[in-house]
Image 1 (cartoon, rainbow, N blue to C red):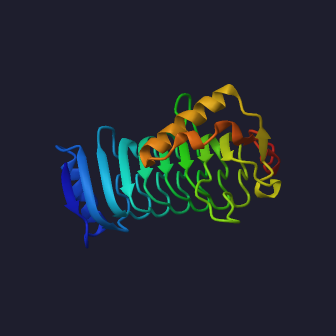
Image 2 (tube, rainbow, N blue to C red):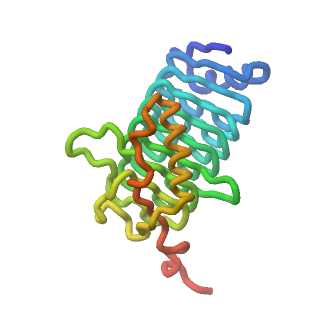
Length: 245
């Protein structure tokens, strides 16, 4: 494994170094990362990057099959429009995580900011998944068109809410799974509670086990049957806003 000390390196130069190294070495460790943007953008499969520090915005944008593991927090737009691969964050992350995500998975040990999963989508077998260990901010799953968001609600402080407001606003596809039963006022008017199916339990078990394996948690303490599932009321919720020709 090749190691790069990213301290003081401009993000353009850092990404150029990564591009050169992966031509011959598929495993890279980045130390002392502090806000450098676009790390892992467009990376294909068979490449694995370990990041020690705090990567900047648009980590793994358009990533296409690689794996990135962050030992620290991450900033905004992690996994922006990623096609495939896996991101594992040993910490929390900022806003718009998984923006327009089209495939792959993101596992967040801690919390996530606003508008996580905005414009997520799916196509045939490509169904992206975001798993959040603790809480999420407002507008979770906004304009969501596909994929899955799983909110575990672990390690919350007293009187701390696992979910912000306007969850599922504009939602027209996919599913949001929440550990518990949030108050109705936290949901957007386009999201509707739906009974869990056997397939939902299988999906939840799969991703709960993966989350617990990544972060060394006890999967037996998270009960899939206690989750609430929310789906879109309408596949085209804003059709009345457009003129007919």
